[in-house]
Length: 441
Image 1 (cartoon, rainbow, N blue to C red):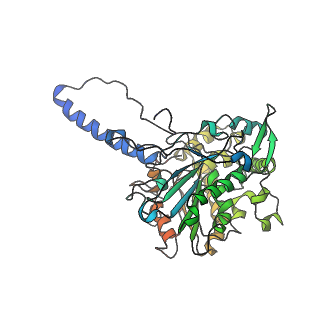
Image 2 (cartoon, rainbow, N blue to C red):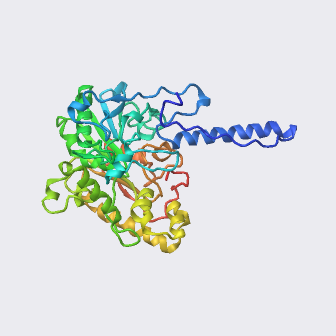
Image 3 (cartoon, helix red, strand yellow):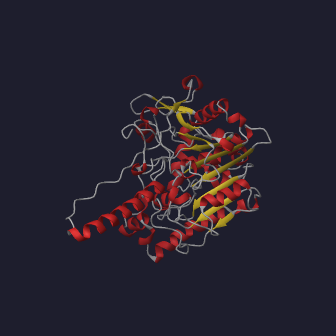
């Protein structure tokens, strides 16, 4: 299945080395095997939606892509007009009537998160039509093994391992929120129908058992994290009052801050998305009554009106935002900044002060969460982005910890109400020794 399943990552072969002397060869082989096993285990923990080590038996079965039925008639199509899709893995045991819906981001490599992002211009959206970010023609089956909150190992994912899990593919370029049409550069139609995609897929899942859920959790990472914030109350409203419905937004708390050149470059991106794709329908009416639609697309405004219990998971030094919001390509050609945003360990003291300012803005914007009784948050100081889908971040010996709790433990405590309050904000970088250099960036 290696050529038909995504994403699949195999370790690269090592170059040939000179053979050791006969007396040391056996010891060397034993050490090499031990190191290889350790590397494979770390690889399995650090790569979301990928198979576990093939050395230990047959790989798990991939979760097939299900295309939305009647997508065209419902006006719920990807940018190129193809039907959107999702991957459904059925629950078992006491998880048979519990559902986790994950709104996709897009992850390309094992440790470098490039994200699904958004398309804010006709050119950008036209380009996405030739990938899975804009067309289901490029989508393939995936594997949930070792994928953090989507994993099926009870020891690593004790609160959600046997739930029904759905991975909803992202192919609209506006966090499942657009509702209009445009023209591509070649004259073909660009379908900005993210809102219809979200609604139609949730409707289809309700018919497949979601309507009978006793517990439901809407999650998403990055652009999918923003989508989770945008749709949280709507998702909750679809269930009877007795059903436990909550939301978990991972790395979706994007900030409206100036970049290092003093420009609001990221505001321009969101402004393009809001107007090109007509996202007004998903924005809070209370916000629209007093502010520009673009401002209402930022999470700092969105969370003020959300009533459904939500957990905000984010890094105060979010690697994607540092690279694309605080230090975008347009803001600086200084090589020291290029090195700094590639790896926070390369930053000098002046640059760290700038990053601290970014972190402080996030903490200030999250103060409203302190007054929301059923909400939770885990804001670490690790240089990373998206932490629920990676086993190494979610729950492993080197996972980030706050209050001596991994992310999986903190989310579980909040979701199951094992603790009265789960609201943790880390100290400033580099204070947290659990922020491993092996975390995905």
